[in-house]
Structure formats: structure tokens, C-alpha cells
Image (cartoon, rainbow over all chains, first blue to last red; front, side):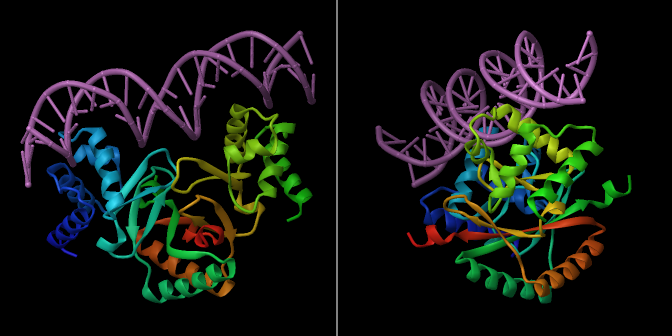
Length: 147
Length: 147
DNA sequence: TTGCTTGCAAATGATTTGCACTGCT
DNA sequence: AGCAGTGCAAATCATTTGCAAGCAA
């Protein structure tokens, strides 16, 4: 999805929830589009020092409610945000347990399909109504592993 | 792994890090063994009102450092703890996005193998050194879905 | 104007820490 | 006796919220 398409989609999502697509919100979406993985508040704030922290928090929450953004927590103390799956490709996360960095990756479709089947089965067995899954790989990123 | 085996294994892990296996720590391990999924501090505290919150936090951290316990964060504000994978079976989590409850489940071995292969491949491609993976299913648990 | 947005500063709440006390060894 | 473990209360720190001012319809 191109940058403009994402923008349009977000605009539509916001309109649907009676929210404005303000300047600050555009900046957030843009920052999230840039990164190659989910970003922390600090990382987002660093992309544009004119953004007030409280507004970043508020607007990310608002965007999350509108369905444009997803909040994820890895294991360290900061939450991270990324564009909703609907606006990106289905992907997973490489989480470096040393530096805490998180990077996206995709699984080949054969594996992904096998996984979906297995999960569907397991969910049914547990009486669980699954909406989506979340898969992370934990370990050391390239730069941390070489140290 | 039986309750006693877990206990022995934890004892060994603690000894290896020069830590005592005190009463309070035994209670924590026991509580975690009981639950059918990772537990929050609140849930653990509820199993034994004589445990001080600060000690629960401290001891869980200590057990985590010893490798006996794993801390996980799902998406709500509380962290959860479970016995380390080494002391249990490899499993995944059903996370109810309504009530926040987390329950363990296992994937059939065929799917798990396919997943391992795919992940190994993806990790190599990204120059990532993976130690393990984490897979959650998000949705509504049986009781929340029926509401 | 009218109401949503923003920025600042103060409040909240999970988690951490200091310190004095208790209990192993 | 001597040091590790505990409980309480105070301190932290990410996140949330109240409020007054700015901005768009």
C-alpha cells in the first residue's frame, strides 16, 4: 500500500469515527510508515520534536480506537506502535532480547498457511474465537550477535 | 514434569546462582504450577495472602534471573509470569482481548515443525540469531464469546 | 462562536527500592 | 554472629488526565 493510500485509508477510518485527521496525527502515521518495525513513543518523538508527548499518547490511542494503529508490548517497559495490519502486510517481529529493538519480517506463505490451519484447529478445540495471531522470534539481532 | 521434579529443577537452578529456595519462593513456583496459564501479580497474591507484593515482585525477578520463570506482557497493563519453558512443555497462549485472560494451548507437532522450519529460514535471511519463538492467538475466550 | 486539539503540568498506577527487622546457616 | 530474605512505606517512571489556550468548521 503506497503512502498516499495509507493516508487515504486512515482518513476514512477517522472520518468513520468522527475524528479529524489533524496535522499531528498525520505526522504519527507518517513516522510509523517510515520505521521498519513498531516504534516506541520515544522513537516517534525523535522524528519530530514539535510533538508533545501527551498528544502523541493521546493521538496514538485515538488512532488505535479508529483501527489504524496497533499497540504492542514486547517485554521491556515501553509500548510500541505500528500501523494496523489492515494497512500493511501481515508480518511478524524479530525481537532482540539484548538491545530491545524490534524489526518486521514475513513468513513464507507455505508456513503461514500451515500455521493458520494448525491454529484454527487448536482454537476450535479450546472453544476460542480467534481474530488473529501474533508471532515473535526472540533472540539477538545481527549487530548484537556480533558483539 | 511432576510437581516434585519441577521443584528439584528450580532448586538446582537457584543453587547454581547462589540463591536460596525459600518458603516464599516455593509458594510462587507452586502457584505458577497450579494455574492453567501465566498469572498476574494480583492472581498470585490471591493464592496466598501472606505474601507481600514487593517480595512477590522481587522473587519473581530473581527466579527469572535464575531461569526458572518467564515474564510476559500481553497487552494490558499487568505483566504475567509463568514457569520457564525448560520446566514445562513448549506451548502458546490464547489471549482473550475482552477479559484479558490468558490460557495455554499446544500446537500439533506437525504444525510446530513446519513453523520451526519457516522461522529458521526467516531468521537466517534476516541475520537474526533466534533462541525461541512466541506465538499468541488473540480473540475471545469461550465465556466472553458467549456474551 | 463552538467544540475538538494541543501543550503543559499535575495525577495515576504498576513496579522498584531503601531500610529496619526477621530468620537461615 | 553474619548475611540473605522479608515487609512496609516511600520513590520511580511510563502513561493518563485536567485545564487553559489555539485552531478549524
